[in-house]
Amino acid sequence: MTQAEAPPEPPKRVNLSEVVRGLLARGSGAGERSLVRLTRNARGDTQIEVAVRTDEEEHPTIAAALDTARAVYDELRGAYPMSGESGGDGDA
Image (cartoon, rainbow, N blue to C red; front, side, top):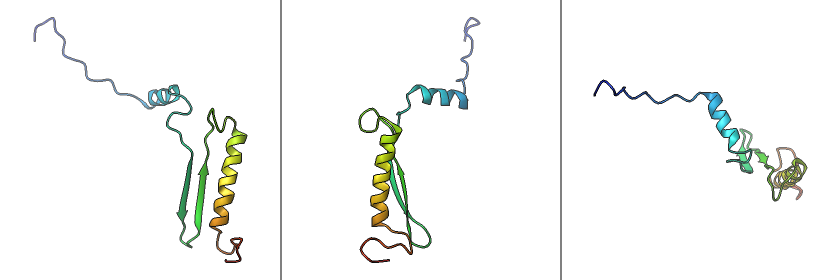
């Protein structure tokens, strides 16, 4: 190494604020997807989680996403009633 050459600087560490700024810069829909998650609790009841994201095509507004989420939730709640609820076909 000659005197004119400086040792290479170690790579800069990225802090949390920079990561968040980068994620926000990619756009609100980056990596976000709608989902349906079904899990069973200790009593054996199916717990339903529905998340519908807004987008430019099918769900351009929160109200449109909410309508879809409600429809999916209601359909699944009918298929997976909680303990003590009737499932619509007389079974509990």
